[in-house]
Amino acid sequence: MEKRNHFMRKGVYSVGIWLMAVAFSPQIPVALAAPNTPPVSESTYGNLYVAEDVMANQGHFDLGLSYGSGLGVPQYTLSGVTLNLEYWGTDLFVSRLSIGRFRSTPTTLQSLLNEMLDQNQVALSSLAPETQVSAHLGFSPLHGLLNILGRHVVSYDLIFGAGVGGTKYNSPLPPWAPALDLFVEQKFLLSTRFGVNLGYTQFWEHYTDDTPNSVWLNRGVFEAGVYVRF
Image (cartoon, rainbow, N blue to C red; front, side, top):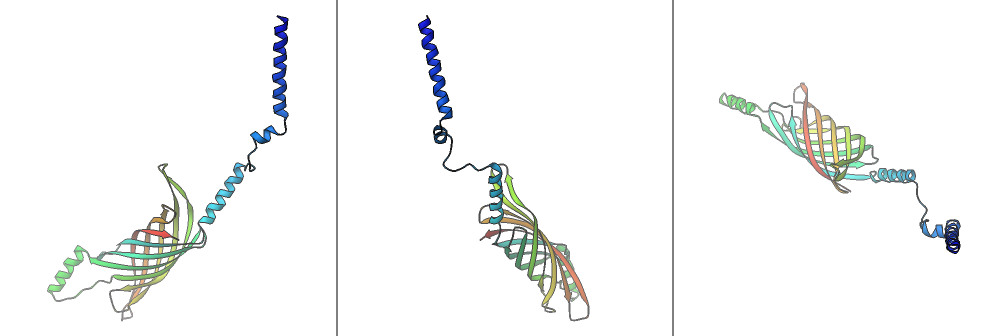
């Protein structure tokens, strides 16, 4: 019995000595625990990730095509397409050149009025925009990533801006009228290159005919479109 206890104590001592050798060996922890590259703390990794995300949204162009529908004009309904070229120098500011082409259709009330005037041989025409050219400067106070239903992440921009330009009406006097506008727009980048946009623009146009009379005309346009980033 004593002989058996002697061997058991000897085995326990042997295991203990082996564990101490493993724990204090200078080579085994390096081989088992240390990676080939030094670990990066979570805070450092987060800072690097944010810096790369901000830089990725600087210095690029967006080329887009939008379809718009006008409102605020009782004489006709307005629709058209607009070509936009944007340059993002930073993730906060954007400059834009826009060229729009519009088509106007008389409303039902205006059509009835035209028929009544035609019977009395009186001609009546409504001023309607045909072409719009403008330059804009926008500011994006809200920029980031949106998680849609936990399945898809898109880049999002909310933009407020103003522009100046000219509007060509369906009247030869004058062919162009100076215009001002304010706009708000939302942009969703669905992939690395393609996105969609939704926005609203309010126009004010200073129209002067061949008489000393002049008038400020205003109209609003809702727009939805697609764009490509490069």
